[in-house]
Every structure is written in C-alpha cells, then in structure tokens.
Length: 508
Image 1 (tube, rainbow, N blue to C red):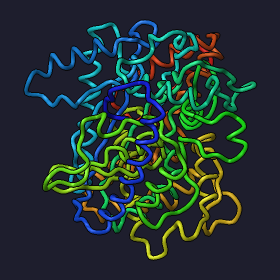
Image 2: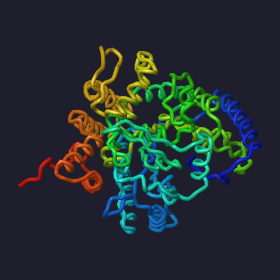
Image 3: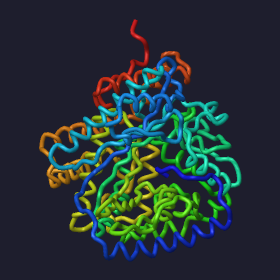
C-alpha cells in the first residue's frame, strides 16, 4: 500500500481477473525464487511515521499537506523526493531514511539520520503552528477527530483501502481493548483509528537461503522486542496496553465480522500461525488465506509483468502482500539490475528519541543475526503458540510482562530475560556483524539502563500522567501537558530512561 492506485471501486469481473493473475504471479515467483540470483549485502533500512501536534494545545494538527509542501520547497529540485511522504492521517508524515549497513558506524549514522529527519520535519511543522511528535499513539487524540473526512490524507489508495475493509466487514469498525476501568469500547464508521498507529519499521536485506531463519528468529523474539520498546499506552484518553498499537492496528483493519472471527478466520493484521521453511510459505499463505482488498491488475496500473533483462514485477502479488499486515512481513523488490528480498519488522512504535530508536534497531539487527547462526535455533525449542503468547503479553504489560521461555521453569520477567540473556546476545551479534565497539557499547548501555529501570516510553508516559493527575489535573489536561514534556524530552536528545518524571505533589 505504499504506492498510489488508479481507482476506488472494482467490478466482479476485475476481481476475478485479479485472482487469476495473482495465482499466476505466485507460480512465477516460486520458480523465480528457486533459480534467480539475489543481492546479498545484508543492508538495513528504516521508515519512520511521525505525528503532527498543535504547538499550543498538543492536539492533532491536520497540517500534513502544508508541512510536506514546505519540506519539498526547502529541499529544492536536487533533493531526494522520497525523504518525506504522506501517511494515512492528515496529522501524520512518514520519513524514509537511506539504506545503510550495521557494520562499522552504520547504526550511529542511522541515529544521526533519524535525528536529522525529525529536526527537518519539526522545523517545517513549526512554520504551520505544529510540532512533530515521534510516539506510537499521539496521546491527545480524541474520538471527535474521526468525525467526518478531514482526518484522512489525500489519495485513492487510502479511500480504496477504507472502502474495501468496510465492505468486507459489513459493519462499523469496533475497538475493544482492555485497560483502566472498563477499557476502551468504541465504534467508528471508518478505518480512522489505523491512522493513530505510528511506527518505526526496520528493513533487513536477506538472501533466500537465510530468509526462513531470519523470519523465524524475528517472530520468536517479537515479545521481548516490543516490551523493550513499548511507547503507546494511551489511546482516546484511556490508559490501555503498554503497546496499544498492537490491538488497535489489528482491530482498525479487521475485515472480519465477529462471526468470522469466532470461526477462526485469520485477521489481516497477523502474527502468523507456524514457523516457516521458505519465504515462499508466507506469500503462499497470503494468497491462499486472504481475499484481495485492492484488486487492481497490472493492466489497470499500466505495468508490465516482465521487462527485457529485468526481474518480474509481480504487480498483483506485491499489491496483495501490502494488504496483509504481518508484524514481520516478507518483501520482494525486483530492483533495477538484481532483485533483493527483505524482512520488514513492523511491530515497533515510533520514538521517543533518535537514540532510543537507534538502540531499538541495534537490538533487532543484533539479535536476529545471533539467532540465525545459533547451533540449535531458538524456534526449535519453543512452540509458535508460545511466541505468540509472549508477543501478546509483552504488548500488554511491557517490561513488566512475565512470559514462558525455553529452559526457564514457569514464567520469567521479560526485563530480567533481556538483561541476563537477550541484550548481551544481541550485542554479540552486532560485534559479529562488524559494528564498532564504541557503537555497540553506546546502545548496550541505553538498552540495559532501560531494562534495569523498567522505564521505556510507555512507562514514562504512564508515570508522568499519574503524577500530573495526582497534582490535580484532569485526564485531558494531563495528557496535553505530558505531550509537551515528551516533546521537550525529544528536544533534549536524551534516551527516555533519563527523562525526569514530575513529583506527585508540587513542591512548596
């Protein structure tokens, strides 16, 4: 869904034709995957989704069109037009970072690029009375934002996506998430809540023979990874999960009426249900289990299936893959000369700072490398259901979660597991990848301090709002003030575990 499309409505004949072409694409991809040569450089890439908040009130600011225009004007004709783009919400922008590598000072360069992109976007936002807030959910979002159409960014792809989701579901979108009090129970006549979910997406280029191991490793470690980085505890004024993006994204794009969910039909935002032996397993499952949401054929898109001397474009298969939102998603890119395969890790929230996000990236790239080359793979020692349960528990409770883990009796506190085993293992993986010792030491210190203190972005937000409320603020005022302090923390550049939390009673 990263590209524009030409229509928002499709006939039954177009849908039937698309199904035939999709199967043809899948067969071609199976043969191509077995015979083609792919780029094998192990490069990394990042996409960062950002929120725009009013500089005074911290409420969502629907200024993305103006901010992007200012960024383009400042960049000039020689700049990379792909640096910034729309996301689904008019209060979101997306920053794309150049491809890099984890060896040497690559991760330090990533941190610098993240900081530079956020500063550029924030400077442009300030021209329009807004600030950029890198966070999983903008805490000041209210249900009133989603009344009407103003929240949505321009473009056919978003309108077509919404129409297809609502048509398949046949009724309003429901968000039902456990949390304080009775939790959140709300309905919407659009997929607007999906726009509340802003993430840091990590890409890892992987050769075909290693892809299954890399994907299995990413799935196995998903729970501890999300616990370490959780940064989305508030949605629509409610304190919910530490990483509320996880259930919110699942439910906002759920094409299933409740009866289908009860029958075991899979959601389109999906953890999966088994370990894999090949990248092809994931594409085959996507085609076999999920009907097309955006059945735009390559003929409608005016794109060839094959071009002389190039890899197959596989338009239908790639478009379909973009409408099944796995937390770890396979990506095929035909490239210009030689194709490549990527693992896209989608479960991290945005923020808080460039240092925090670079540390999160360091953990992911290091631990995946370490697990891929373990003598006895982690996923051979745990069931897939165990990995799924850890993912859910860690999304709900963050660093306070207790999960089942191989060679551990009962449940272990995930913060202890990270400190004693996983962070050291990830840092060893980075050293094997050739990362500079000073770079590894920097991110190891951030991750270790975060796990030891228990203060990730979610914990800081919860503690700050609690303190402000104990000082007499109501929830909306506390969320706005917390968001101002959050933005100040981003300006400081300090990792979130070092941010101050206000005293629970004002000093006399």
